[in-house]
Amino acid sequence: MGLMIRDKWKSFVKNKKNVVILLLSLLVAIKIPQGGFRLILWILGGVSTCCLVDILLNRVIRKKKISLQSAIISGFIVSGILDYSLDWYLLVVFSAIAIASKFLIRIDNKHVFNPANFALLIAALFRQPLTWNIESNTYLIIIAGIYLAVTLKKWPHVLGFLLVFSSTFYFSGVNPLNMISYFFLFIMLIEPKTSGFGKGRGFAFGSIAGLMSFVMFKCMAQIDIFVSSLIVANIFNALWIKKGQKNVLKSCH
Amino acid sequence: MKVQNIVAGTAVLTVFLLTGCNAEKPAHNKHGQEEHGHVMGETDSHMPSAIPVQNEQEILKNSEVREIKLEAYQYGYSPENITVKKGDVVRLIATSRDVPHGIFIKEYGINFTASKGKMEEVKFVADKPGEFDILCSVYCGRGHHGMKAKLIVKE
Image (cartoon, rainbow over all chains, first blue to last red; front, side, top):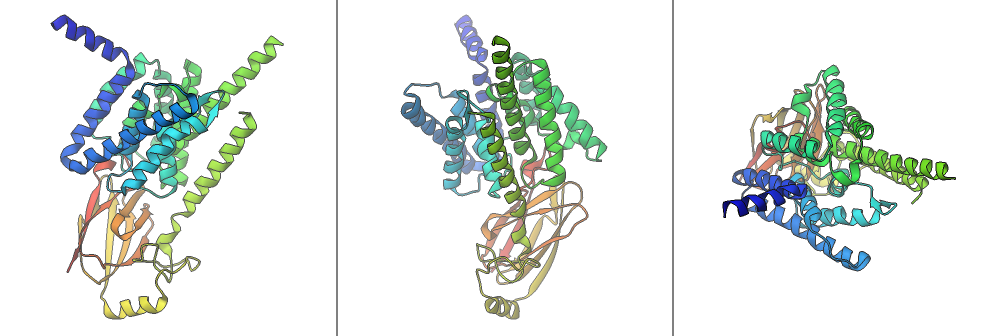
């Protein structure tokens, strides 16, 4: 019995999306005493909208069945960062935008932007408050985040971000340890499909996000500094892939 | 999709960002009130007035103008509770002790940024009784999610 449970746990943890979902659920649970019943409904609303739109778009466009783990994660992030006191229709709209962006903004059959982050940028541009309620326990995020960064081989992204973010903020007189969002660093920045692989590219990706966070902090802090910086880093990643493909084609000719 | 498309996409995003930058302006609206019909600002006369100037003057005549100074800091507001009477015209003057912070009151349609060394202000009529959360809408650090104050409008 004990062995069976251990095996099941091992196979559960082997899939890193399960670990992320477990972490997000715990973070929401920690916030429930403050957020109450509305927070639970808000998160469930975000997750179910993302799942429904994902199922619908996959059936219509790709005509295939899919795993809903990515949609669940997107739902958690959108609803966990968007303030839960907002109107319900906004949650539905931004959750739907998150999933739709995966299908609409693509390069070479791969989506460009972290879906939840793209929706949150739109929300920020329309002056909707991003209160980051899901960032309820820093220690839990750091412990799980280091595990995810190492096992997903995303530590160059984390290091690049930390180095540039810390130095720019420190030299401008702001304590970087107070300003940093560990949820952004360990959950959003290292999203596998839109952040790219490799030590050099990962480090550059993280550095660009770190630098853009500082630029946004200085120029347009009202548009979330992390959300906007990740958009720029995602564009950089897409351009890098495109450039790499061109070089391969040239060498073939 | 070609690289040109990405460049076009980036251009669209830049326009969006600039739009977002301008979106701060309603807090300074001169004569009128904002879309929710409660906010009266100071400097920009280009914004449309939802409530005619005549009405604003009537409100000012019949109500008491309450000037309230609000200081935001990592991670709270001083004072924590703002109490006004229903019908008061509230002149909320906000600043920040450290990094930029947001002042968001959903029920009154207020959302603006308070920065260090700057005084931002917004005027509104406290016409809805009750207790309303004042939340920080600009990411300000690890404790951002718990940053809160209260606007109490008494009957």
